[in-house]
Image 1 (cartoon, rainbow, N blue to C red):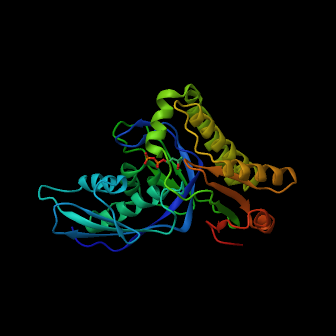
Image 2: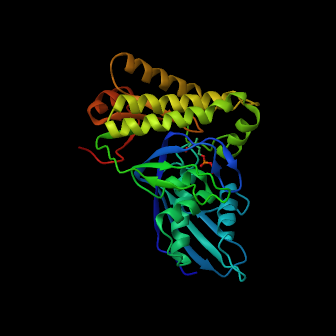
Image 3: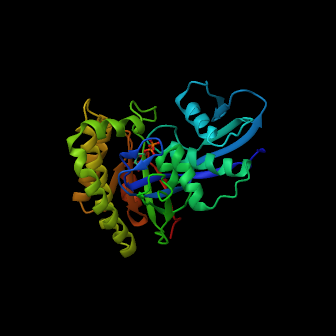
Amino acid sequence: PVKSEEKFAPSNIALCKYWGKRDKLLNLPINPSLSVSLAHLGTHTCLTPIDHDEDEVWLNGLCLSEDSAFSKRVSLFLDLFRQSKPTHFKVETRNSIPTAAGLASSASGFAALALAVNDSFQLHLDAQQLSVLARLGSGSACRSLFDGFVEWQMGERADGLDSYATPLSETWSGLCIGLVKVDAREKATDSRSGMQRTLETAHLYQSWPIQAAMDIQAIKDAISAHDFEGLGAKAEHNAMSMHATMMASWPPLVYWQPESLMAMQTVWKLRAQGLPVYFTMDAGPNLKLLFERASADDVLAHFPDIEVIHPFGLI
Ligand code: DP6
């Protein structure tokens, strides 16, 4: 391996969520999912081979301790490529998003790491192979290899080679995502253990894959038809169904905070007044608002502190 170039991968927000694995080791999902990538918000990563007997993982300019959860996951991922004479690396990774705030930094992190590994080991992998590889680091990372709308087909094979993401051809200029930052701290239960708990203890989980299969089709139809209200409604319904399933776990898995519910109530009030704004939420307390450019001023009047992202640029 050689020193890699600095590689970038965008963060992504799922409109139809991945929640639950049929294989924990390979991060193979129980349902297909669909996301939109966040353009310039994501992770930059560079790999430098070093003469140490351990990896050194740097996150946003700070060297992480070897037993931090993130640095362990990075080293395990690098183990997949180390040969008989193991090389260790300085892994420099920089996020332009708050780490572990439910803004999918592990997704962009492992996608950028897969790109850096491909460069450092000169593997010359194609996009599909890179997506499979990134998935081994974190499931949702397989979607962060691409811009725009991205679908992760769950696949059927036991080795996971048919479980990767592909970009959709449709674009949507004027689509806006507003990040409502309720709490940027590390979340209490990471997605990995949260999913497992849901799978093992929530009876409601049985209906989740059925719901997700219907939602992903409806979301794809709404994207093709450029039907914003259809897209927003299905994405919000999908997120609420996932959270209902999480809450039905034992011990209960509640990622919401009082401010999360307050923000939801504001969204519902605005909708009742005729403003087309919807939200989605991942395994954390923050909301991601979905709206179009034409509604941006009205949305910002009620959510003045949000950061607005234009995944496809502006009209
Ligand atoms: C709620 O991809 O972080 O954000 O595969 O265990 O690393 P692992 O989980 P991860 O889970 C993301 C869950 C989600 C929904 C989504 O992004 O689809």
